[in-house]
Amino acid sequence: MRYCQRCGVPRILTSEHKWAPNGTISVTRDVNHRMVFIDNDALNHILEQISTRIGIPLEIIIQEAKRKSGKDFMDAVLSGLKGIVARNLASARVYSQLSKQVGMLGLGHAELVDYKRHSFLEGAITDAYSAPAITGDICGAFESVEGCTAEARYEVGAGGTVKCFIRSADVERPELESRFGYVPPPLLPGRNIYELCPVCRAPKALGVQYAFDADRGIIVDRKTNHRVVLIGVMTLANLFGELERELGDEVPKMIAEIEKDRVREVILSSAKDRDTSESGYLRYLKTLELKGMGNGVSVALSDGMVEARVDNPYFEPLVAGFLAGFYEATTGEKSALSWNDASAGYTSVTINRA
Image 1: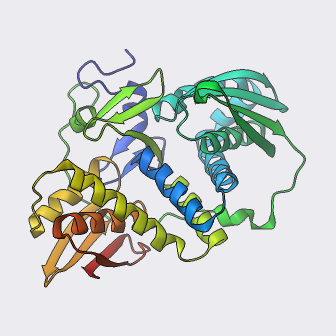
Image 2 (image 1 turned 90 degrees about the vertical axis):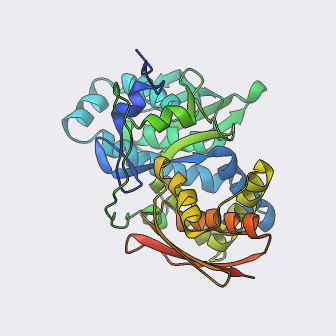
């Protein structure tokens, strides 16, 4: 069966990912490749807002960051003997499997339209989560499987179908190619306990929170009715890191502010009473765990100031904005926000009245 008959989660998803007690999700066959469920509307909103504020389209940056991340991921998947067989004997089947991965991750429904080994690939993606992003994903996979550099372009047709065109190319990558490299910070232990599905052994909360349509390649958060995607933390780090390098060191603050404003409005629209005690903040932070976003371990309140520690944050500015949005929605006051990078495995977020 494609879905677990008990919890409704696709079996390929639960077999290929592991939920750890420290607020992280990792790929089973590559524990260093961390994944995260993220609201696709929120991610696209952040990118659109950055583009609007700076007056520069971001499609090329998004596509290139995803190409690099996609190649790194496929290089890890196709390592050793498995990679030799895939690249030399069954390369076409690799793309068939890749299309299943795309659907499982909620990135859309991908079909191989035309392909010639070591030469070109054409694909069509319906319900794509992002046209430049999915094109970058497929280009990176092509480079890994074919062992060559490639060029990519896409067209968005009727109904939003994305047609991507990948071609092998005798091009030299820029000298700054290495700037896409990502070194994950150390992971700290945690004590979160998930109630597991007795059939597939995935967290039971996964099927409660999300609705999966593997045929369309869509995952929906039942609580918000928003589309979500399961993508690599490395992908986000590369994407936002590239934006910062290209556009300036104000980008992280901009990302946190955009996320803060979005979260504040989402909370205000829910019209629910919110517990703003320390335990209330900790319950709010606990929603990060299932998504692989990190592990909220402590909160301290004092004279309108909030200090919170989150171990293994997936991306510090987004975690900080997530907390600041809660603060502004529940206090009705503007916030001043700061955080530290997670090079030691955790971030400390401080929120004051502005």
